[in-house]
Every structure is written in structure tokens, then in C-alpha cells.
Length: 307
Image 1 (cartoon, helix red, strand yellow):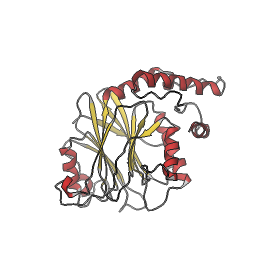
Image 2: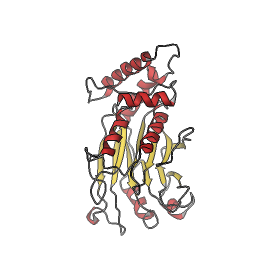
Image 3: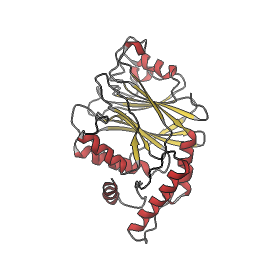
């Protein structure tokens, strides 16, 4: 479980919990994971046996069934005993090209938003996927608290020449976000599972347990994906939350300001944020967080221009 200094988050595409529920539950407890995100659960209903069996004693479970094809897809987020959570309704966010589940987690006096995403690999990424992801990111960053986004995007982010990886990097950069997984996450190679965080949350340790190798676990089941574990420092999360709340980033922009003034104001504040608790200051690199009072269409244009 987490100490006062760290929160351990686990991310795994299980590709059907049907015969893996026990093994995944043991992975959660053996690795002392505080927050677990599962994709491709393939559970049909929230009370399905497999989704209930995967939950260790004392954990809280949130799930999302794929509505049009409940025998495939599916997401779950599990929280350890010491954490409480509430499902976030993605009101006004149109999503059709990927599955998404968002939960706000209370960790003592700290709030952390956890967003699980699964994009099916059966179809190539289309422009609409990136547009919908942009809309989701706008919604999440405006909650003005720390957040972590991840799951199986089925995009080869390890390949800098891949056009979809380039597009994803560009979208994330427009919001000051970075993808943190740097090792292969699939048995056939490639980094398909991602963990995304604001650049200002710099001190993150990410490991990948290659579960497709029998020597790496003792379970009588086959995994195609590795278990991604991201260790988040509560000091970084608290600093991000506190500094954002007291800065102009945590306040609505005045409607009578010139169009360019709020943008410059937000970038100046974000520079202070980076300098205050990041070990990786990047001089001259613009970072953008959407301004709360702007409309979606303006936010989209601004994020694209900054990327």
C-alpha cells in the first residue's frame, strides 16, 4: 500500500478476466498496488463473477461495460482500502472512438483524478479519435487538481516516426502533458500501454513487468501485455494541487481582458509552477493549460496552435 510519500498505480490490459481474475487479484496484492486500472476486462455486467473476483478484500471497484459489445472491451478501476473514490460523469464530452472511465480519488486531504482509456486495436486511429481525446483532456485539466491518464491506446508510442505517435505527442504537448512509459508493454514488442501526466509532475518512476514471460510470474494463465507500475510522489501531487489552486490557473479568466492576455497570464503562472517543484525545467518551452472560461472550440484551436 502507499506510504505517506508514494502512491503505486498499476495499469494492465488483461484481455479477458474470464480465466485471469484470480491471477490479477494476486498481482494486485503481491505488488501492493494502491490504484489499479484494467482494460479489456470483457465483463458483461457490473456484477459479473470475473469482475467481482478480481477485487481484493477491502478494495473499491468502479467499472464500465462496453455498451455495444459487452463481450469485449470493458474497463475497471480499483482503489485500495485507504482510498475513497467517486465516478466522474463526463458531461458534455462526446466519445465514440475509445472507451473511458474516470474516477476522482480522495487520498487523505489530496484529490487525484484517474482516467482509464482503451482504444481498440482492431481499427486504425482516425482524426476523430484525436479530436475526442482533445475534448476529454480539456474537461480533465479544468478540474484543477492532479490527474493521471493511461491505458491501452494501441499506438506505437515507442516509434518516433509513427504518424499516430507523432499526433498523440502533439496533442499531449498542447496541454503540457507527457507519456512516461519507455519499455515494451506487449509480448510482440512495442509500447502500446501508456501513462500520461503533467510535465510539472516530474519525479515519477515507471516499471513494466513482462508478464508474457513465464519466468516473471507463477500464474497458469497467459498475458499478452505487461503490468505497468507508476510510482507517484504525494509531494509532487500536493505541490501541483496547491500551487494551481492559489494561482490564476485555478480561477476563471476575466471576460473583459484582451484575447491574448489570459494566455500570457496562464503561461507565466505555469512557468512559476515548473520552477517551483520540477527538477526538469525546459527553458523556452511553452506549456498550455486551457482557460476555464473559454469555449471548447477556442480551447481546441489554442491547444493546436501551441502544440
